[in-house]
Every structure is written in C-alpha cells, then in structure tokens.
Length: 184
Image 1 (spheres, rainbow, N blue to C red):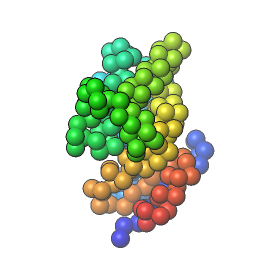
Image 2 (spheres, rainbow, N blue to C red):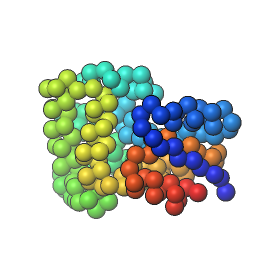
Image 3 (cartoon, helix red, strand yellow):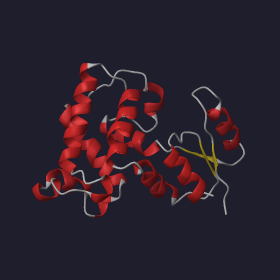
C-alpha cells in the first residue's frame, strides 16, 4: 500500500515547495489538472510542459476557435476513455455527434464543441490568457458537464503509478474526498 499526500492552501502558501521536498525523497507529483493541461497543449500545438511557463500570456490561436473547439472536445473525450470507439466519431459522425453522453451529464459532442467555441470566442475578444482558458474550461464547462470529470481523469492516470503521490492542486471538495477515500 502506498501512502499519498494532498497539500491544500492558498496560492503562495508553499504547497509546491513541500511537494518538491517530497519529490527529492522518492515521491511523484500528481496534478489533478495535468490532463486538462495536456489537452490544451495538444490543441494549441504546444510542447508538453510549455503551458507552465506561459499561463499568463495571451492565448495564441493557431487555428480558428472552431478548430480548437473540435480538438479540445476530442481531447476531453479521449481522456474520458471514449477512444475505444474513437473520440473523433463524436465530432465527425452525424449520428454520434448529437448523441447524449451520460458520463458528461447528457451533453453531446456537438454541444461540447459549440460551448467551447463560445468560450474561445469570448477569450479571443478579451485577449484572454491560457490561465483563464484553463480555469474557465476546467471549471465553468467541464465541471458543469460532470462535477467529477477531473477525478475520472485522475483515475485513468493513476492506474499506472507505483510511487507514492503528492497532489498539490486539489481544489474542490469532491477531489479531496476522492483522495481521502480512493488514494490511501
């Protein structure tokens, strides 16, 4: 049985410093937001990890907002393990595109695309930052579709982890409950 630790506190409280100390002693950092960051990096053609250094920068659109909305939706569906029948099918197939997805609160792939596009259009108008995109996509949209979506992502990612994990970005009560009940 591995021991896991979750660090909570306000921004600047030192969570990352404590996590770094644990990492130096054989632990691994697990970020609840890591899958969301991977999805955004892939959609905006960023290298893995680049998002950490540019979160405050204005979003650089490499495609149209609709193009990014489609790739973000595909990424979300793939992380929800829809890849078994093809996440692209939810975007490109006429019948699959409009089918409600129960694990996402009944939203369809098509509805996801348009809701994400509306968010991107707004951020483009406001010269929004990647941080704003991460916050609004992860909280206002994805958690609306499924309040446990980040937990579902975590379950998938943690299947292969062997070392003890330190989580320094659990922000919601359901995430803390998941850590307490399922990661001990």
